[in-house]
Length: 213
Image (tube, rainbow, N blue to C red):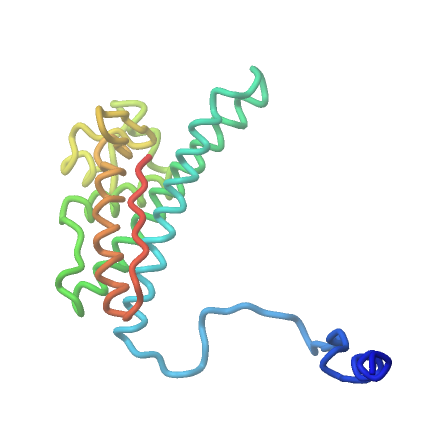
């Protein structure tokens, strides 16, 4: 009887370990990744998705700015210190550029969902800071030397934010001020609420994150 049981276990397919099948796929042409397809897109879904994308991108870049600033003083003197400082300036620049894309995406979805909006002052600060940071080679000299006349966005920024300081982060008591005018933490906290509303529109559970710098 015992031998019969052992023989059954040996021949029962369910008692055998699972087999692993291997398949090979050969691609024809280059592999691609694209966020632009040929199918029609629902305007509301696209606007909500774009706003979420730039909210997440803003949060990611603010986190990178915080990390680079924390590492700026950890390097040795010389070239390593210069590289660390360069990284902070780069992340500051990308925060400014990301911020204007964020403001545009929020403005677009605002026409569909009135509850989603940034303040007029935040939007204008993001717009002007982006233009100044993006055209640094043209605009920076006028902020460095008061005898050089300001042009275009520099004029608008100086009129709207006379205490502003492009290419500068001002460390206030509870916030970091990009260009001396845009409160990074305050905007990041506000975006957490907007993210929740947008995710609710999509019917997904909200996973809020309002991490400050």
